[in-house]
Length: 292
Image 1 (tube, helix red, strand yellow):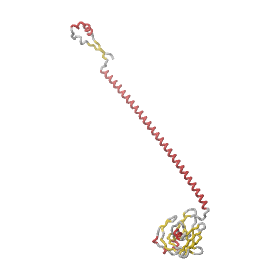
Image 2 (image 1 turned 90 degrees about the horizontal axis):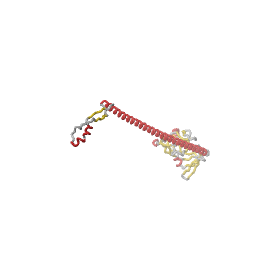
Image 3 (image 1 turned 120 degrees about the vertical axis):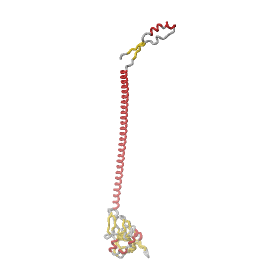
Image 4 (image 1 turned 135 degrees about the horizontal axis):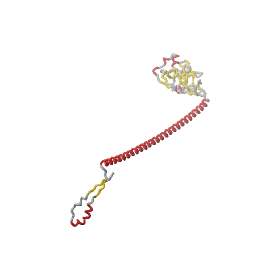
């Protein structure tokens, strides 16, 4: 753009002065009458508008660049945060995996310990069974029942000595076969517990005339008995629970009340039952062989 020149005359050339100064200033006045030139570097209105728009564009571009930088910084921060979160998650996953592995190892160790303990227990039980078999080989008949004969009200009967029974009992089948049901006091029913079962009695016989056969004589040993059905549970030699029927085995069970009442001792080795009887005139000891 070309520079425009503006010319001004000295506006102060006609100012009055004192006489004393008129001559001295004559030369300077002559010089001041010459035109003075000023240079104006400004733009016209159109050019000024273009310059302003350009300046605004420049400022907008600067702002846009700053905004873009801010966006890029924010993206970088977000990526860094995501990377940190990923690292934290990976670290947590790694810790969880380590804990799971440790738990699995602990469980495996516990299982191995349990298996070892179980093996030790099984070995101990096997050794115990071996010792028992050796011991029982020297104890024949240890699992067998003790049976003796006698009479009830003058009728033949078979008796079982049961050291595990608290009370004595007679089977209903024997009373029914021998027409003695009317002896039962049905108001005395109760629940009795055996070694392998519980049962309700049919009542009570207050006085049972019972005699034991010693082989040479009959010993009078009356007793009170409960009346039960003809099913009697016991164990066989293998330890299995079996059911015995009195019609084929025995008719009366003699328990601890009978054994203690008549001071009976049992010699399992000699298979003998020893009665200590207190008679009116004297005390007498009677030995009876029993069968199994």
